[in-house]
Image 1 (tube, one colour):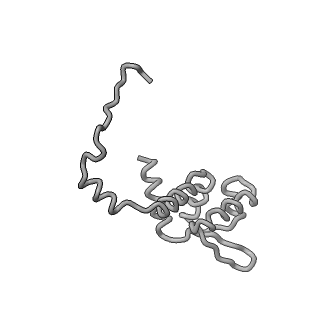
Image 2 (spheres, helix red, strand yellow):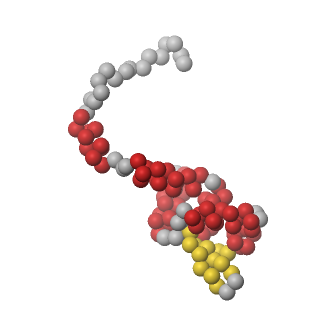
Image 3 (cartoon, one colour):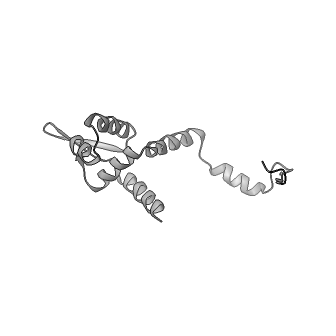
Amino acid sequence: MDKNCEFEVCKCSVIHEEIVDKVKKNIIDDDTAFKLADFYKIFADSTRVKILDALLISEMCVCDIANLLGMSQSAISHQLKVLKLSNLVKLRKEGKVVFYFLADDHIKLILNQGLDHVRE
């Protein structure tokens, strides 16, 4: 740390009591914060994000996703399992083929807003 830097230290416990009270009444609880953090951890893997982006365009089977991303079916299946357990994707069977799709419109919205943000 630069010896010339000085940080102003707050000498009281609350400066804006009404703001702190308002936020305290409305801030999410610890359990909800934990669940939300876990939810966003799913998006921290680029393979999962690419899978979700592909499913944003169309439902797909494991074979097609593996071909699209140039990965093994086993690797894709593993990521799809993570996404399914996190309730981000669902599946439907057509004969022996399993198709994956985004679980709901919230996921579409989150993906689209995230893409808009990083493309700005």
